[in-house]
Amino acid sequence: MTVLDEAQTISDLKGEVDQYLLLLRDLVWRVLEGAEDHSGLKKRLGQLLLQRYPSDLQLPAAYLVLLSHLLKFEPFPIQTQQMHSGAACLDALGLIKGAQLPEPAQLAELGSLWMILGVHLKNETLIYAGIKVALWQINTLDHRGLPHFSLWSPGATFHPAILAASNHLLFTLAYRLTSDPGFNQVAQIQKHYGWDPSTLAGKLLTLVPEKISAPFRLSHKPFAEEMTVGLMKFATPQWSMACSLSGWNSGVFSYHKNQVAIVNAGPQVTPLDDLEKFGIDRTCSLSSRNFNEIIWEKTAFNFRLKGWTKVFAHPSWMQVEATYTAQKLKLSCHLQEGKSADGLAMVFYARCDQLGIGGKETLRAGSLERYQGKSLPLELQSESEKIFIEPLPDLEMQIIPVAGGEHFWGAHFLIAFPFAEEKNSFEFLIR
Image 1 (spheres, helix red, strand yellow):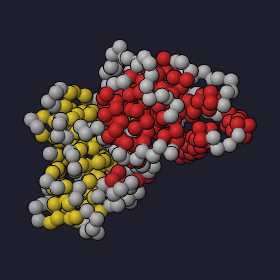
Image 2 (cartoon, helix red, strand yellow):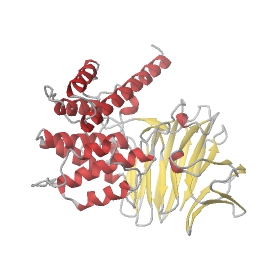
Image 3 (cartoon, one colour):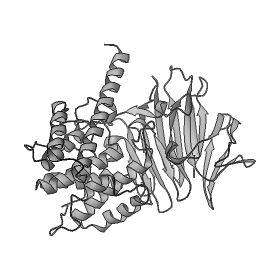
Image 4 (tube, helix red, strand yellow):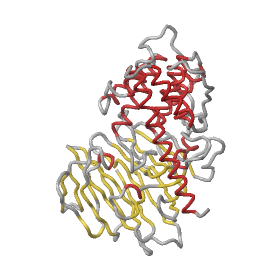
């Protein structure tokens, strides 16, 4: 089997599992909605059981256990596989490479199912596993309680509203089971960005009562072992930053203030607007520590992350370093020596009302204005808030307006710095 054949096999399996998940979700919705008689629903479940996948594909397995319980089939055993931090790989076996990551939307979905099943099957292990997922997911939020879209969210398929709904379900269930007000606070924040009680997530929420007689307590809050997934997360009351060496068609960096943000950044294979060729390709493991070689240092006042990650849809590896010291944030990237840089760029997705270029020119969100020329200091502004990006001089730079909304992680501008044989290292100061 060639590398191309293997890649096609992985892609085909992912598509099959995604389709299988759609059928499972639809059947759960029909059961909870009472849309059909039970005999017809049981027949559908019987057909799905004939083509079920290994239980190491944890999300389909959890849905099958839930359906079997709701339709009174013989119960299936279920085991949780997750890291001490609470993060979990959705594919614990390694059948689907892109699923060996704590992808936020599906991880929230999985944690929610574990809590629901724990309540209905009277299984405290499942309940605690779901609560640990919620604790991990909180650790990935920014200083306002909103997600960093750069973290493990595939560029080709990501929808912010789906993540918001999944997170609202996860945090609401955790609040109902623990009575911890912190879960309720972040649940309400997510609710404003995509909650619809008529959807499957809304139906699933009805499976756990709003109050339980004896709330669950964690004996300790698991340490968020960011290093085990190649992640550095840092926040102050004014801003938040996330940098990740793990991902699949996802970014390496994001930086949020309140009104203005770099919502994502990473390598991009041309064409620049093709998100199926964006990001990095390095996955995690439940059985080994994959990121032992990275430099990971963090205190209350500074941090440093340095390590290698593979470019998605490209044969090159890239060294990424993010540091914060003396109140200065620096991001640098270095392309692997000896590899072609043709058609490869480092791109930033910016959300802001206007973008100033070198103090001389201003592009406005929603317009068709663009820029191509030498790199200049950039000023991202919304209302009175600003982010400054200072690239190295003498680079080529393109700025292209993008749609925002549900697309391009809600960004208004794509800022690209093409790699070249003589320009295989970039450095940016960000403040």
